[in-house]
Length: 158
Image (cartoon, rainbow, N blue to C red):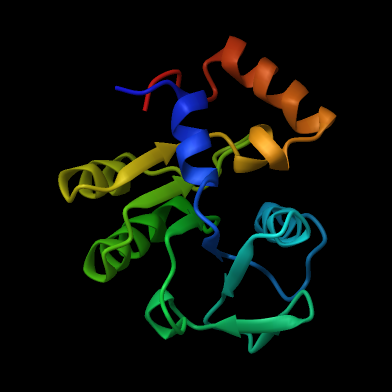
């Protein structure tokens, strides 16, 4: 098993990343924050929302299969009960790195989705946020990472 820090570095080494759950109304949506930060840091990001044609001023895709050229990694930012369907789509498409976003609160992590993904060769990070690590981190996310690591809110091993 890898440490969360090592798994995060491996995830963030990918440059084409889809973010599910990006909303048309960005206030208070963690997926929008992740999407914006990755885009601002030079990642090629793709918003996935089946109910929107455009989010954050960019084209939105109804599902992962609709993204031209596919992606290397996916951040799941939807409700936990939809995470398994997204994980199944990742497995079908050959996506090998998935991060189920979770800060404070329930987030998007699902034990069933994580188990399915790992059983299909996907590197799964079930909790935390990619903005807590590497080139995407800011002070607030680093502090949140520290607090969540003390409270058990993020996995120590992946």
